Image (cartoon, rainbow, N blue to C red; front, side):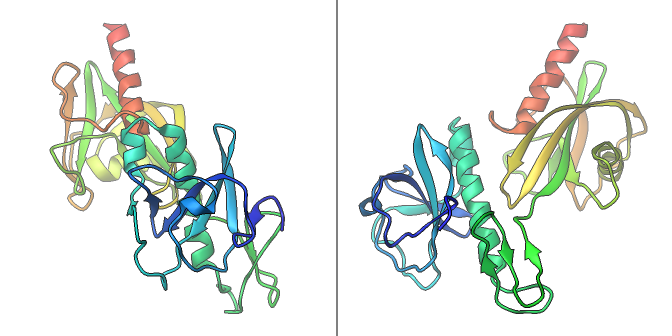
Length: 269
C-alpha cells in the first residue's frame, strides 16, 4: 500500500487514532486514543487505515467504524465541536479531515455514472471506476462568510439553527459561475436585503460540517434596509460595538472575522 493507506490488521506502530462513525470520532475518557491498536475498542473491519497527517510528530490514522459493529465496550463517540471550543484547533482540523475522508470513501463505493464498484486509488485520495474510467475526489464545498461594518456597528444575523440567543456573521455557499465576491454580494442580499462594498479577503477555515471551505471577508455596508429571509434567519440587526449580542466561540472563523472587524472600527474612532 502507499503511504496514504495502511493495512489496519497488520499495523503495529503507535499512532493518534481517529476512529470515525458518521460525523463523530471515538474518545476514551474524553481524549483521542494514542498508542498501538490495543488502545482501541475491538471491532471488525477490512478497510485500510488512512494517513491524515501528523500530531506532535506522531502519525494520525483514520479508521472507519463499520455499521455492522455493535457499540464499543468503552469510551463514546463524540462530535468535533468540543475540540474547537476547547481551543484545540489543530486537532479540530485533523479530526475534521478524518471525518470528511471517511464520508467520502463511504459514499463513493459505487460509480455515480455507471453503478460499477469503485476501487481506492493508491497514489492519491480518490476512487476510480475501471468500467467507465470515472474518477472521484473528496468533495470540498466553497462558501463565503462575511462580517459587515456600518460606522461603529456590525450587521449580525441569528440563524434558524442557533440557540442561546447567539448572533453571527452571514454565510452561504458559492454557486456555479460565481467568484467569492459575487457570492458575498448575492448571499447578503438574499439573507438580509442590503448591498455591501469594499469586500476584502481576510482568511479561510476548513469547516467539516460536512465539507465546507469557509472563505472569510470583511465588507462595508452600502445601502438598503434589513429584510430578513425567514428560511435562513430568525433575526438580523446592526449592533453597536459596545452592545454586542452573544457571539460564536473563539476558534471559529466567524468569531475571528468579528474580532477583526471590531478592531478596524475601533482603530478608526
